[in-house]
Length: 162
Image (cartoon, rainbow, N blue to C red; front, side):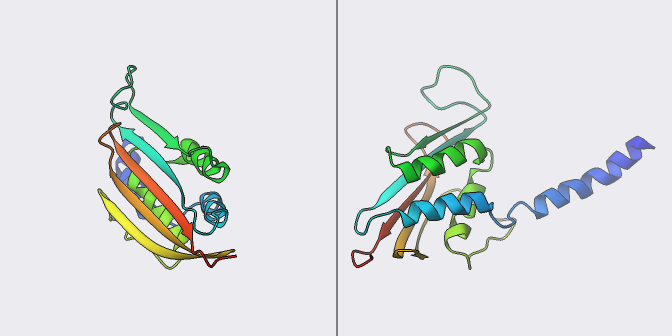
């Protein structure tokens, strides 16, 4: 009886998980992203890069691993907050989901189909931040230097912003 329940319930549970895969992005992630964008001085771009690899470790790492993450923040306190969040919560197997969440956070009218998978992307859009409009550039691509994928986000406020 238990085996029958498992075989009957497992597909329904799996479909429920898949159906919610691209639900609204986590509020905490959106908050740190918006703080990062808001902190960008006019005319001075700021960025971070989140590196992920699934099924192995990065190219130059000696120890084996099933997955790995790295985040480059360049010493920027606002980028450090995003990196801290991504190192704890960022996905490695489905790293593109983190990219789609970031875009949805900063472009609230943007949603993605649940079946969409990104392999390479470059997205440029405007975001209305607290201190004026900012141009957001998101890239997601193969990381030829370290292996795996890299998600980069750059924010730059207009020169005329406060």
